[in-house]
Image (cartoon, rainbow, N blue to C red):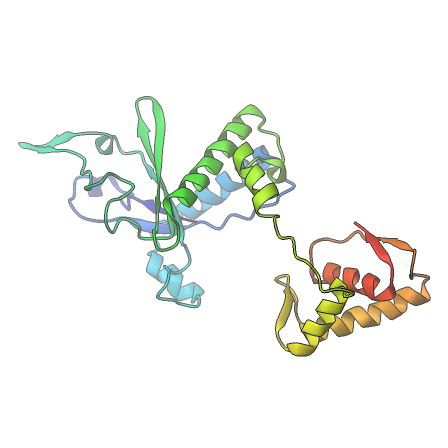
Length: 277
């Protein structure tokens, strides 16, 4: 996540006209098992440490990290958190004899042309009543409905942590009732009629023969082609049979979501057993 800073650390820069803004890249490590309050303290320490070096040009950080560059997105950060906390930015003000008012793009903040400089930007502004915000999004990547869902998720998380700040991050609600219904009903409507007399395992093995080198499973740490997945499952199946797995047997499976989990489930099918998650 990136955040812009004013770039005016010394008092003598306050009265100068010019663009001094710099982007600071914030790397926040998320532990789903942490309570929100613990994660908040860690994030605060990280932000303060990063702001101690906010005079380092963003371009210099990019050169030092040397990420893979792409014309499709900005380097290092594709999401921005912007906090407008300068009093003059809240409303109209005067510069000598000149009246300055906020610029409102045609169509409003959401639809102003050319506004999105990154994939997503959460723009927060201090007002007399607290904070107000808007979500600016790249319309090539997100439609209006998706952007509204993301904004709704942010609001739901904020409401949840205010009500119960010790909640673990993994338990914070992202979806409302309508979204949960959509995921459980429409997204799971994947019924498929199998050919007569053939099992899912038969179809997998046939697919592995047709495209042995195609990617079958990737969990971030391990990538398996269909050939590798089939061989790994067959080897494990032989071990399971020697351990007593077979028809009319049920084996308990306790694994994280990973390539090993898929290998294990296929192996149990190959051994003729059923699995119990």
